[in-house]
Length: 151
Image (cartoon, rainbow, N blue to C red; front, side):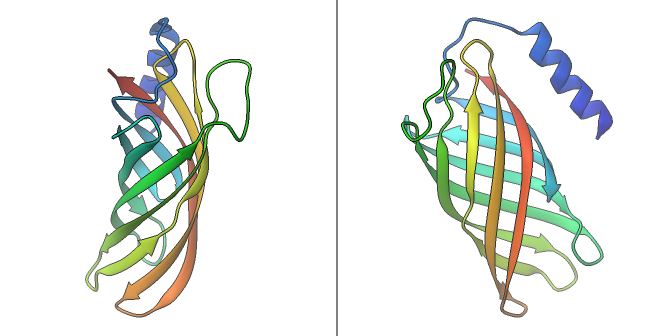
């Protein structure tokens, strides 16, 4: 995991290009928290995107977790002098690949800073989860992450 983080930090400093804030295209990076792993985002419009991850869940014995959300961004709520800082909310699902697979509905809420002069974004999110199988209960997840944008 340390090598992945170092790769993204080196990319960030080496690839300081004059591109507009990344509200289009495809981004790939890492998320740290619950879960921790690879994060991706694919913009569908200037305000909506698919956000997904393949990550390790530390709950229980720890297992691979796959998640996907459709998110709506509100760009005008928090004005910034450079880049963009949208608040976002979404809905999606997750599956934890364990002996007894866990399936849940996610409602992510977060902030995503889109740099004005670099193909990088950083994000912070909190996610209430309604677990539906094998039993029904509520949970809370969240994390911080960084993505590099391929446009």
